[in-house]
Image 1 (cartoon, rainbow, N blue to C red):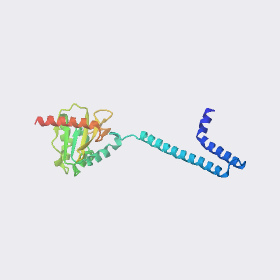
Image 2 (cartoon, one colour):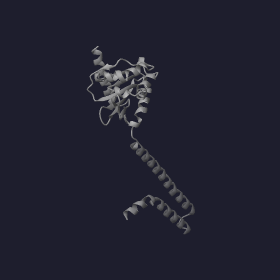
Image 3 (cartoon, rainbow, N blue to C red):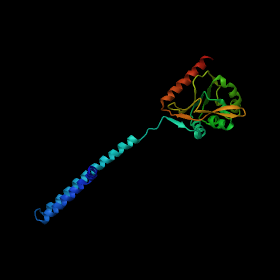
Image 4 (cartoon, one colour):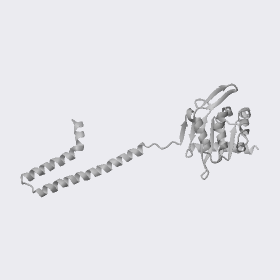
Length: 244
């Protein structure tokens, strides 16, 4: 019974206006009220109803706007790139570079395939806005670098952009790549992956096992994580400079 009454409440105002209007008309026919008062009374009731509807409309609009604001999810500063999109997204990433392109702790064996090398490295070399390309790698990767990467770089246009490898003892279990996305503000972005499952997989071949990223995290320029990655990179760069 209570539920029926609640559902009736929104129409109570309209019912009241109808009852009052019918009563006014009846009173006029009974010659209790003058006709001009009847018209004025009904118009007054309609005006009150219209004003109420306008007020309710504004409240509804405000409620809708509030719901939209609460339902809007801000864009994440970290985006997970799935396996099917890694090649395309990584190539697009390199083409967006407007300055230096840094690779940290990447596995050179993943560049064994010429197609992968062209997609991930050569595309950046051919980007006219790329000024220099750096690799910071573990000494344990020297053989793989000389076998799978260095010859491809020497055969490629733009090889002068690739700087000598910074060989560093790396304890961190991550690999990432950073680029400059805005020359005026020095804003950067990164692609980050983690060594081991589930982020990295091993792919067996005739020339041994190649380690390939399975998932990559796109770190946008407004992410706090980018500051930590930049600090890590700067520390290894400084250590390399001091040992020269």
